[in-house]
Amino acid sequence: MERGEAKSKKAGGPPRLCCICNERRPVLKRPRTLQQICRECFYEVFEEEIHQAIVNNGLFKSGERVAIGASGGKDSTVLAYVLSELNKRHSYGLDLFLLSIDEGITGYRDDSLETVKRNELQYGLPLKILSYKDLYGWTMDDIVKMIGLKNNCTFCGVFRRQALDRGAALLKVDKLVTGHNADDIAETVLLNILRGDIARLSRCTSITTGEDGPIPRCKPFKYTYEKEIKLDYFSTECIYSPNAYRGFAREFIKDLERLRPRAILDIIKSGEDFRIATTTKMPEQGTCERCGYISSQRVLLDGLNRGLPKMSIGRARGGGVNGGDHKKETKAGSTVKTLESKQCGSLDF
Image (cartoon, rainbow, N blue to C red; front, side, top):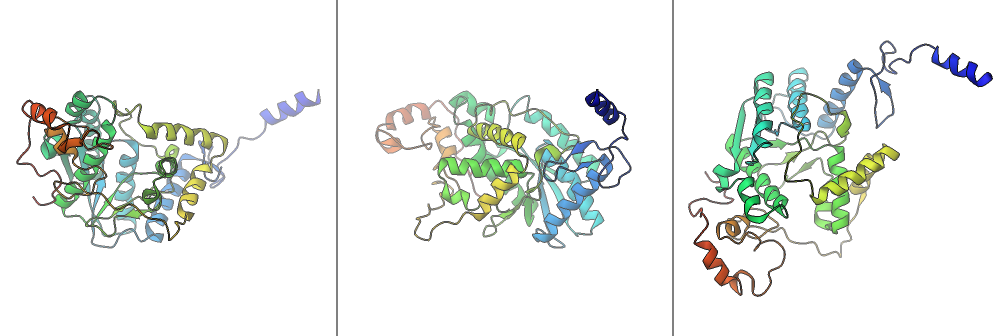
């Protein structure tokens, strides 16, 4: 009887209110603070946190030209909106641009680019689109037809990174910002631990990378949980990535978050606190053998053009390209397209 009365009393009590304004009903519980807040307060707090991340880390200087890597997904769409708003509100003095890469994935990228084009009109930001087809002579659809679903993310990752750099160079920007959020960074920390990749582990948690290169990259959403990023966006996953290794790390991170929401930020903090012994031999930064562009693979584009797409992935066997594979290379080379006139990685246009 007492339990029933207590339950009834609880059910009939006053409605819970936003813990910030104490006026409106809460619509979400924040994973970082566990605060229950209303929609209006969430928007205000969310944008202020991004502003503080920008200011505290000195991400930008007045007068800089900044390209926003825009895929049409929720992270980059929200990033474009928030940066546009904060730039006006706090007088950052930035010239903002949208930069999109068309990998040539039918039913995925062609649809998501429509969202980016809407963003161009909504936020009044100039848009530049570069395609794999124009840059390399290949689309991801072409590449997958040749190599299958395994290892296709290796090609796409290398080509996409270079395409963003080339697009940023075309726009003559000072910085490139991406929508990588806290979940993404925690996944990367975990992946680098599983792979034993010391070099990447030492820099993957940095909010700004590539400062010693021509165009630094910034991640304003470094401390922002993925579930808090909400806006108009294209929501389909890449059709070629279901079996990507990162997917397993992503599922593990989600399981951890359900048990302990702060686990994501704790993993990032752990990555920041890693110290590499001075006696540890660090791997040298790899470059493409043909064009000299930064790449962990030797000659990806050259391999595609010769009809030997796997020649630069992993270790060569049986003499590699210069040995036992020479006959296959010659035979295949006569049946596939070539891009003799294309520079696979030069930033000179």
